[in-house]
Image: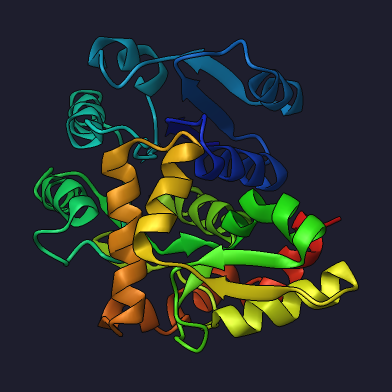
Length: 291
């Protein structure tokens, strides 16, 4: 029996990981840590067998109880402007609790010094490596499921909008695959298979033209990609409630794809190995989000 703690279980990756752990666990203790335990999504996790415990990265003392005796902990970095310090707090709490193994979330763009997201995640990678704890880092690209934000336009107008050039290849990945991979890593924490490793968890390369074809098949009608200027993209994201710092960081990711930066075209070797199967395709995600 092992005790696995997911810190920051409120987001898509955290919930996907906990759900995957719950489907794979036998007698393991799965702990989901979040600031707000009253949400329906966490009540659902509890009903499936997870222990849902309140905890806040802004107050590391609240992490002591859930981390006590943990064999493995996953620090799911939050979408917060102060996420570097918040996640460093969680890492320190793991050190204090002498957690057996730490999994740290990062981004494929982490080596792009001077960019918003890279400058947030590089200190986390460095601190994890220097922590003295057994550890693993998973680097992620953008998510295939992000297209779900445009379901309305796809159904109403037969269009989706990004600033990407239609033929530019890039990696993205399914949140479900990420959750399954992270669960697999956490469940094997005791055997040191992944200790000291950094994995690029990316899906198969695709283009916006490919995505349009997948959406067309799923929707049963023609769906087109419309390339929009970066400024229009920024206005759209901020109109949906994204803060400016995060919006600017996302725009930098789009620019990296259009500029053919190396991290946008990584092989999916790690993903396939960690999943034991081919990654989920954009066609499958299109069918899911449009159902």
